[in-house]
Length: 267
Image 1 (tube, one colour):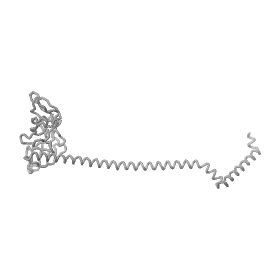
Image 2 (cartoon, one colour):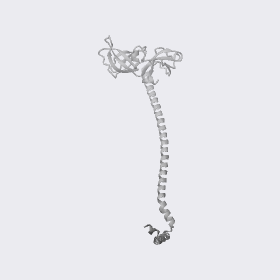
Image 3 (cartoon, helix red, strand yellow):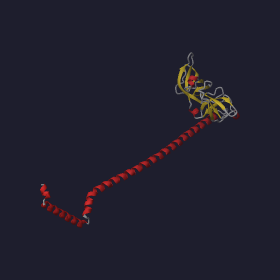
Image 4 (cartoon, one colour):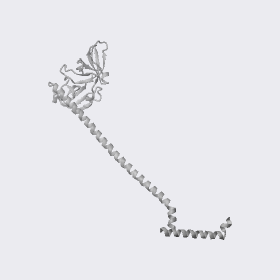
């Protein structure tokens, strides 16, 4: 076989084959206007060109996706900022709404108690060392404020004035053991007076004392000032009944009250 490839006959056959290939190439060139070289080049490089085009298209798509993702992130940031702005406005709206409602309730209290003089005040300080939450208002004797004047917010009893200067006053909270008020439970009309202890006050609790064993006061009842004694306007909400119990070593009963502190927290 090796001798055949080296023989004169093989060389002649090879030459004939090359001539035939040249003729075929020339005929193809004449038919479609392309050269043999371009045919071969096209045959060899066409798959590479297709692969290259495919990769370029994918890269362009990836670039577009990257740009789009970046745009989406920017838009998400803008939307988050808008949501935060709307939430802030909603909080302001809810706060303003509560203030309007409190003022409307205050007007009702004022109309029902024409004998009382009402003075507007704003909290300008709080005693952080006071366990019971005393605070300072920016109104004093120059405004007609006196010791033992009640302090209210809307229809809620907040506390009582304990000290007065010409331009300010110190207020003790309803949960301070030094504060008590004549009160009644609005459903039953049963009367007593509120008081508290240091232990109860730490949990925002008071007692409506002076109830009998036959009391009809029940959990969920609302206790308000009765107006007896002339210190507090009638009908100011103090708290909600959480339990009814018998006094230790006594025949009387009392209702445990949860002080309505929301109004005080908003001062």
